Amino acid sequence: MNFTEFRTKWAPVIDKFLSQHLKSELDNQQISQIMSYSVMAGGKRLRPLLFLATLSALGQEISEQEVQISCGIELIHTYSLIHDDLPAMDNDDYRRGKLTSHKKWGEAEAILAGDALLPLGIEWIAEGSNEIAIVKIITKAIGANGMVGGQYLDIDSTNNAEVADDEDLINQMEWLKTGCLIEACVEMAAVYAHADEQSKAKLLTFAKDFGRSYQIYDDLVDVVETSEEAGKKTHKDQATGKNNTLTILGLAKSRQELSELIKHAETALTGLDGSVLSGFLALYQKVLS
Image (cartoon, rainbow, N blue to C red; front, top):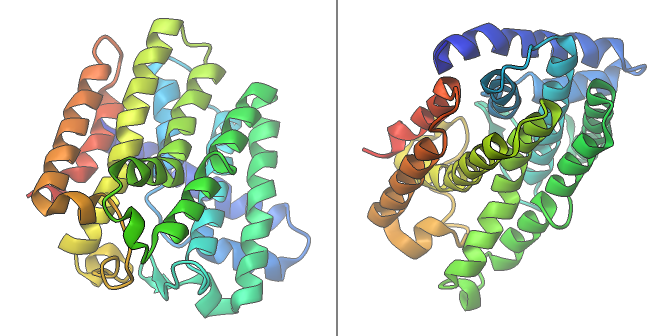
């Protein structure tokens, strides 16, 4: 099975679980509606699919239990997007071609929707995996030493001339705010499926390359795509004083860095059933030309 076939099979399953359980598990249907608005806004489902694809590469059967874990990851990712879009953060009006949560429902409502999605996501992961090790991986990845820490560095570095040329700090910031959660998707699957040490090492190398390259890809999207193509406002990073890989390396070198990371990630999958996982890397092709 290739990536397209895998996504065609499992993305609707993920969407169905999310839609049904956000309604059935929440007592207050108004907050359920606000939470569902952002979750069901048409995302790529990259992170839950990455978790499931890693399981598949390791020969692990996928049932509703594994889908629940993957959907927990998606809830956590969506919480981060809702809070990222707030006026105090990135101040975005559109996400995935729709009004952001705070523009649709109000700032307080958006904050609370994000606050509700985070613990529900952890709950689904805990219930589905029944393993403290899995829960520890995801909570570490999204906390102060992971995603939140990266978001802080992002805010702190914006319009900060002192860090404009600090490549190490920018790499750390972009890894923490984006790469950590992507790596966690793969690591959770490897632990859940009891991968041998060699396979786990290869998968984590792939995950580190994929996670680091995804933020470079996102930085490039801001420059090479229109707002209609991206589903959000583009050509914004430079205007708002963002410091990132693109502002340090420029367009050509950023593309070169992305290409090298893709090649290294593909090499890491040698010896594994990685046909689906390698397909994730094809997502980047539209920003490389």
